[in-house]
Image 1 (cartoon, rainbow, N blue to C red):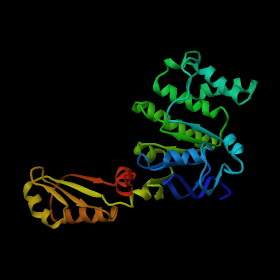
Image 2: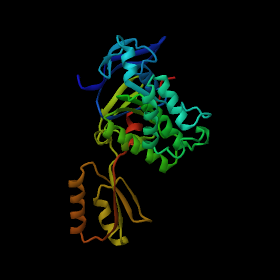
Image 3: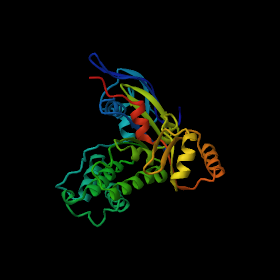
Length: 309
C-alpha cells in the first residue's frame, strides 16, 4: 500500500533449525497506533529488530516509511525512532543535556537547541531540565526517553513496553503523550506491550503473534468477538423467585447461597433485552444484573500458545 507506514509480505526469519517468523504479512497505515502482542518467545522482538534494521530478514518484501528495507536501510533509519524497554537516558547528564546530545548526534546545529527546549516544554520537563536524569522519577525518565526519540522528528516510532514499572497515574500520562504524537504530529506508533489493557486503550489495530505466525488481527472489539466468554450475572432479590425461574434460564452456573446465576450471553443487546423482558413477565424481582464481555486477556489466552521448547 502506497500510504502504509509498514508493509510486510512473507517475512521469515530462522536461527538454525528454529524458525522464529514463518511468513508474516502486515500492513500498518500511517498515523495510527498498531500493537503486536504475543507470548514471550513468540517473535515480537525479532519482528521489531528486523523492521528497525537491526537484523536482516531471511525472506520477505518489506517497506518501512515508504522505503524498501533491504535496498534503502539508511533512509529507513532516518525516518524511524526506537524507544526501547530499557531507558537510553544518560543519568549523569541533565534532561536538557540528554536532548542536546541527541541533537548533536543528528547534526542539527543551532536548531537542535531550540528543538530541545520545545521538547522539554512539550513533555513537561522544563522545571527538571537542569537536574541530572538520575534524579528523575520513572515516569519522567520515560518521558525524557521518548522526547529524545522525537528530536529527529521520526515518522514512525517503535515503542517497546513504554509503561513498564510506572504507577497508574504516570502510565495514563504516557498514554496521553502517545495519543498526542499520533493526533498532533501524525506519527505512526508500533507498540509492543505485555499490558493488554494498554493495547486495548491505545491501539486502533492489534495483531496476535504465536509460534512465529499471526493468529489474529483486527480492532480490539473485533478480536474480542472471536472468543466465547460473554455472560450475564443475575442476582435475585428473593429465594422464591430465584428457585422458580433459574431452571428455565439455561444458566452455566448458579449459587444458591447468594441467589445468583450466570447466563451465557453471546447475542449482545437483543439477547439481554429478551432476558429482561422474560424476567419481568415472570414477576421476578432482580436485585442486580451485570454484563461481562470477553477482554483481551481472554483473546490472548484462547488464541496464543506457549512457544515450543
